[in-house]
Length: 149
Length: 273
Image (cartoon, rainbow over all chains, first blue to last red; front, top):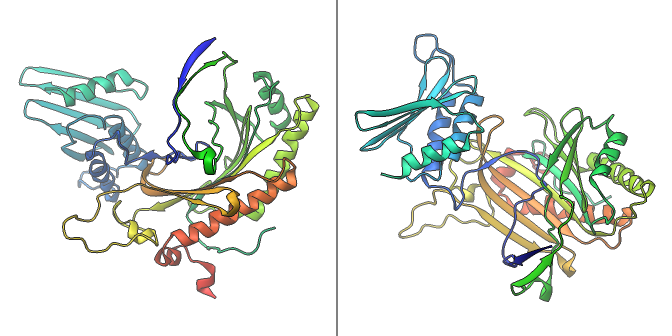
C-alpha cells in the first residue's frame, strides 16, 4: 500500500489530447526560453538553400537534418544563453554556435543524423565528442555549460 | 448520419481520433493485449507499448468545482499501460487500455486526401463491436461507457495564410488585431478555449499551439479540436450518436473559429459553388 497526496486539477486547465498520434514539438511553452522560437526559425531558413549553395557542389540541407537540429535546440532550450548563429556546412550538414564572452559551444549536425560538439572555455580548455540522441546526461552538461559562468 | 456540414477540398486535418472511455475493466490484464492482438494481427501487424492515457471525464456545474486537497491511500496495482496496434499502411491505429478504446486516422503523406468522417465512422463501429465481442468471449464483461471523444488535429503550415506565430488574427475569426498604443504585435501565442454544449451534453476544447513537425521539418500552428461528452447509454448506437454530435461540434466549431481567408486557402466547398 502506498499513500498519495492528490491535488485537484484547476478547473480552467485544458490538457492536450493524449490520444494524439502525430508527433510534434511544441515551440511555445512556459518551460522554454524565448530564444527558441527565433533560433528554430533561423535553422529552418536553411531549407531554402539549393544544391551547390557554396559553389563547391555541396548538397542542400535535408529536412531530416533540419529536424534533428530543431530537436536538439528544444533539448537545449532550458539554457539561459541564446544560440548565436547557425550556418550550413559542406556536405549537407549544419552548425549551431553559441559565442559567449568566456565560452564557446559548437554543435555540428551531419546528414546521417549524427551529432558532434565542441566546447571551449578561455584559450586553453576545450573538449569535444559525439552527442547520441539517448545521451540526456551530455545534453544536461551542455545546458549547464551554457547557463553557468 | 448527421446533417450536411461545412466541407473543404483541401482541409488542414492531419489526424482524427474517435474514442470511448469506460469504467476500468476489473479483470483486464496484460495477457489480454496479446490475446486481442492475436485476433487483429492480420490487419494491425505492428504493436507498441505506450504509457496509459489519464481519465479526462468532463464535469459540469457543481461537480466541476475543484475539490480540496485530500490524502488518500492508493493500492498498488498491476502496471498500467496502453497498447498501440498499427495498421499495415500506417494510416490507422487502435489504442487500447483498461478503460479506453481509441481509433486514430492520420494523413499518410502530403498528397493524401482526408477520407472524411463518413468513411471513418463505419471503421470505428466495426472495431468497437469487435472489441466488445472479444471482451464477451474472454468473460471480461460489457464496457460501461462514461464518455465519448472526437478529436481533429489540424496543421496550418507557415506560409499558407500566416508567416509569424503572433498572427492569430489571420487564423482565428474572433481575434482582432486592433491597434494598441504600447504593445507590438505578439511574438507568439498559445490559445486554449472551451465551449459548453447545450444541456451539458459535452464540451468542445479548442487549442492553437505553435509547433515544429519533425517529420518534414516544418513550423505549424497546431489547431486541435476535441469534443467530449457522455452518450445516452453504453449501446453502440448511442455511442455513434454522440460521436456524430461531437463531430458536428468539431467541424462547425472549426469553421466558426477560423477566418474566411483561411477557408479560401482550404477551398471551402460552398465558396466554389
